[in-house]
Length: 95
Image 1 (cartoon, helix red, strand yellow):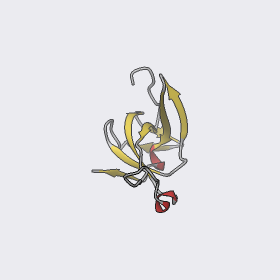
Image 2: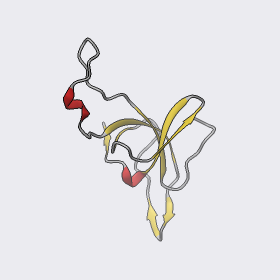
Image 3: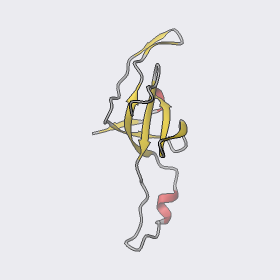
């Protein structure tokens, strides 16, 4: 993703499919709860001074993270859907 570079504390992620389904493709009822979304970090900003405080970036390209459902701003580039989110909104890094 060389065509877009996030600024400051912004992170661009690509959501992964999290739906639990049966072998027949029926989505299970328990999967409809508001659960975090697993996403891959595509790009990140450099951090820096934001609102008078130094922000260090903890996520890196290629990391898998958990983000709240409906967090950030969705956009499409070259037919691929991405989400841009502030680092502080990321819930966890999955190892």
